[in-house]
Length: 388
Image (cartoon, rainbow, N blue to C red; front, side, top):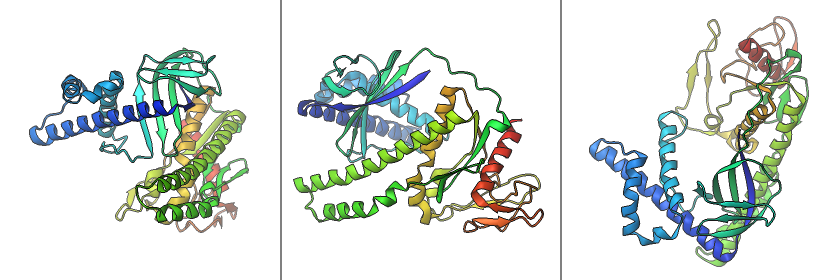
């Protein structure tokens, strides 16, 4: 199994300069390669492979000698990253690659090999940078693969190390209905389980909104290019970083508990990017079942901030890899399954149910439903029926 471990780095001032140099050079090579690919496609109708781009890299380094001051393999890895980005784009998994900016919130460069991890000394030795003080909150055993150095807008440095631990993931057992739980993600409650348990939504961004607004007003009043503006910018970035850290800690604890306490999990495949986009004409229509009416999904930009604060996509990704490591089954249903509008008792489909209706009574069987609990039960039932 491949596992990723992330640790905090504490570089010296000189090492920060070397890291910034690596970030700038790798960004330049990425943009240079993207420009070559775009011009070759639009002018000649040809597609340059990553090997064509790498063959041109030595000439670029002769033309720009400052590129020789950084690790050569990191420059080559930038071209590999561009090639992978185009592969994901043509496969429909990502958007078209764009040019990188030095003002992005997170800057990274990758070291494919030739770095050393020393747990006893508490350092990671990187080529052309040296040994950097590192806080190892846990150790690992296995073969190290690539390492990625990350510089965030808050001024923090991290290293993400991919490790192959030669351990095969356990084969998940067939889901047992009594030990399977359905999970409905929401905003009023972060998650409602088919067992009736509800997890409150912490809403970290909303809680910090007042403090964040004060820091942003102070930043707006500072003169551009001044040291005081940079100090104010760091305070805003660190406030955002604290919100992200709180959300990630909450998601890790909740996902670990759900995987630990249940034999199988059932969730709904959510199109989070589609939910937060408020694009006009973004409506889409898809059939539900052979005899069920169609449903139109329209992005609601009024809920975009709350949906982004919930971080459903990250949480579902955590569930996926933790279920794989623990040998648990993660069942998914389609995004267009009528989990909220279907009566979990008799199967009646209530077409006129709106988002503001938090409770409703089934006209057929007379059952009074809580919207989220009913959806969680239906997610479990749909997932088990589809798996069977």
